[in-house]
Length: 381
Ligand code: SF4
Image 1 (cartoon, rainbow, N blue to C red):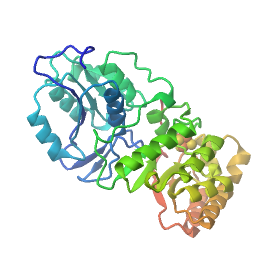
Image 2 (image 1 turned 180 degrees about the vertical axis):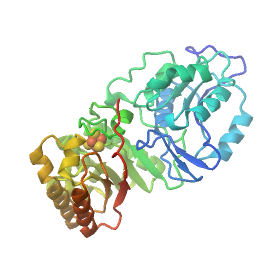
Image 3 (image 1 turned 90 degrees about the horizontal axis):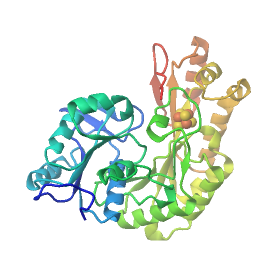
């Protein structure tokens, strides 16, 4: 189907590209922490390209032939496929603001393979880089939406509004590869309504909480597990459980799925949401791990960063965290707490207190990030 696309005669299909990383580095374009994280060394941690898998789902549902080339997870087969195939009707290239020059060079190479067709560069935080994108990859359309559907719609020259979340097509993991760890990403809700000023997740997924219905998410969970048999499903929601009632319904549905539709899963959330009811539901539906954004236990830093809204909440926070950890243990759930030291507002005494309390926790997998000067970077956007 090519009715929306002006194309070269020998072109076929729409190509979706996760570009190669720079030599000796890993680019995790789906990583929210650094808005498309670049780390030293090859073979580092990478989430599968959900943005492109979503675009693929929509384009296939519209009847287009789609080729996914992932130069991060499947570099060899991507290079071979690129050599074999000549021209394409159109292309979507996933870029990271942290590797933008290199990614735009790759996009320019792809542009040469879509003569007369549309090229969309898509990624988090691109709105501020439109001039650079035009300079380095003239004519490329820019999509900075929080899903992959906007890029697919732009390729088809349609309004980039993806519509109601329950109508979004399933991610197509036949087109984009899962990593060898076979962890399959999925969303129930995107975005977050909280105001933590260091948080890049809201740049990546939005400041509105956009939810699918429990039925819709459970249906895709079951379908993806039956199709791909992942080792684990990873809920990428920045704050799983923000909508408590809907989340409990979702977990009840997952718990009731058939044997071939179920998989262990992990979530990420904040401590206040781990009520006894939520932990019970997580435990009985197959949750394997909770990534817990503790951030800090210091009331002054909690207040200065906007993590909590008032002094009374800040004063209770450490107890809430430790009660959630104890309750999670009692439910047999593994927790991986994330702690930041040296945030704005931190004092030497508060720092010591946080270190002592965290040192007493039973969790073997506490992840601590230290900001020795100036605190965690505030994120504007
Ligand atoms: S609760 Fe989490 S996702 Fe939401 S703004 Fe705070 S750090 Fe970001």
